[in-house]
Length: 520
Image (cartoon, rainbow, N blue to C red; front, side, top):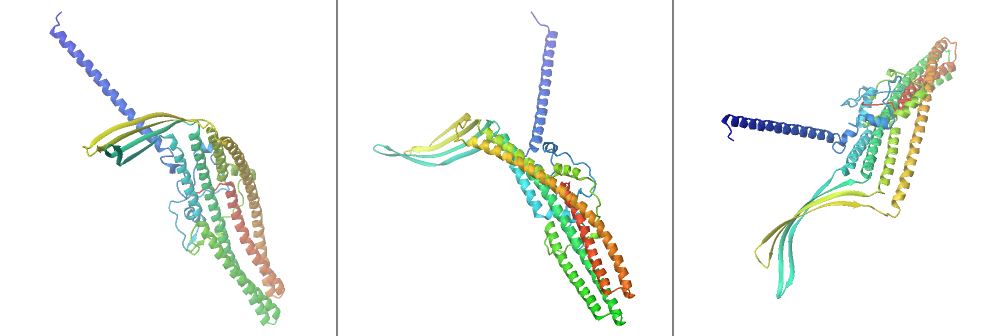
């Protein structure tokens, strides 16, 4: 049968169209495969970038002056819900700038000194480095999930002698044997996962501990700040008391000049003036001691000029805004050191799981490839070259059937460790409750004493004003005047101390609750 020219052309066009369609389909499949490969590569890079073995510092506190913010999953695991909005002086949130100013001779605010301490205090930096080390250890603990690849090689010269009658023969040989090997654990029945979990809980404990160290440093700065401000206020009060004593002495001297006072009265007034001057010098000494304590708290040398805002510029809280039971619940939920103990409990549970995994075998694979190369000659014959590959692919199985009861006793030890750590958590929880309870009622007592001190100072001032006038008019004695003088001086010191006590006890409540959160 003959095919006409038209039919032949149609058949050629049909074949060409089919080939073009197949080419387009192949091109589309290649493009889709390339896109899928790019997506998989990007997803893989994103995945590995999020893993602790690649960037362990992402799992540690970001800086020594910024607290670690635990992930949502960790909050749920440790039963630490997000902190609710609170009110009152018992909760303090302190921001931390990137570059806090160093203290100068100018008066520094409490917030500024706290910022400096979070950067300079050795305790925060040491705890931060410990957390970073724990993060690196967590990354290293995940190494067994990856195959182990190594390479080695032997290269050198050998001269081998052997008897070949009637004389000794020798082979002179140069050789190079590079080798690459790979090993990978297929199944270890929980060994790797337990080791990684142990490291993860150690990291969580280190991060929580870092947060608690920051809170303690903040409280130390607050306590030292109020102590220095109170010491400076005491110096000012002592100077005012010296002026009171001078006023009394002048009043006595005037009455003595008029013949209305006796020499013993003048001596009593001079004694009171000398006593007030002694108290002034003693107050100045306490300022130096308080300044040194504050310098240590913020992490600067004690001989560096350092001054703080006056005590009267500090807002004195009258209430905490929460009842003691609410503060206790907050403390049990928010205290980082308690969360650290819970993490150590999880660590002990992971150690127990690790000990139990030793009862099971380990299954893995290994492979190696070696290229052996020799250059040799025999009895001065021409040099010969030989190159031979050597390779192997093996499946390994290892199971310790008897270890001298080590695994049994490891189970007992880890079980006891977990029980002991559980009691440590309980003990710290009770200590937290007791600390919040004590600090709460210490604050309530300090507020009452502050109110009494205000009333005492007002009454002492009024009594002294009346006594100095009546003494000048001859209606009161020198003993009554000096008694009013001493009462006013003591009332001033009492007022200063009660103010510092209220401020310090308020900071102590925040520290006991664990609500001071700098740098978030």
